[in-house]
Image (tube, rainbow, N blue to C red; front, side, top):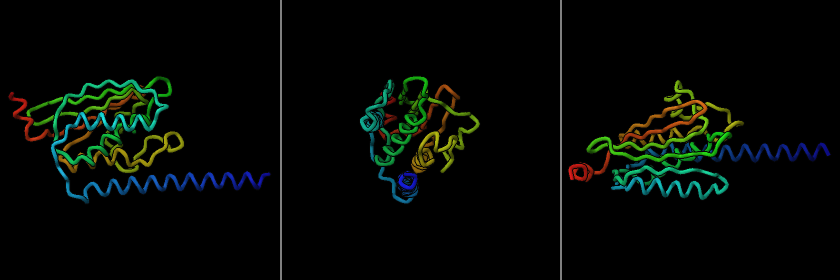
Length: 200
């Protein structure tokens, strides 16, 4: 009957709203905790950590077909493991979310040294991309370039990435290619042994 359909629809709306609210609260807590806790910096094999996160993220989405190209060098960073995992996970989930419906997702992971104590982590995708005009705004909390009807999410994921980088003294930027994909780059400092390794 019409009444039963109305109740079923209202129930779906309530459940969906509750789900979105729960996800938003979770992301906001993660975002606020980053700068409210002391960094636990330890030598971290960054490529290994990113590979673990990739495995976890893709295992949770077995239906996702992804071509993965790993060009990461084995470099060590001085970083908080929990926050680095948050950073990598949010960047990967972002790439999966904004994949192109016209082609299989291709992810290129790069980690390369750019100086004795500096390196760049890049995550490149062939998704829907974005207008370069919004390259800075996308890292602001709740800044969305698409409606939630088009792409679900809280609008906090990339803000978490930016805050992790800021907390570590790193920087993050993005290059958008509308209809072709995007590249997210984290400019970071290596661990204490990096200079010695570079001189070897």
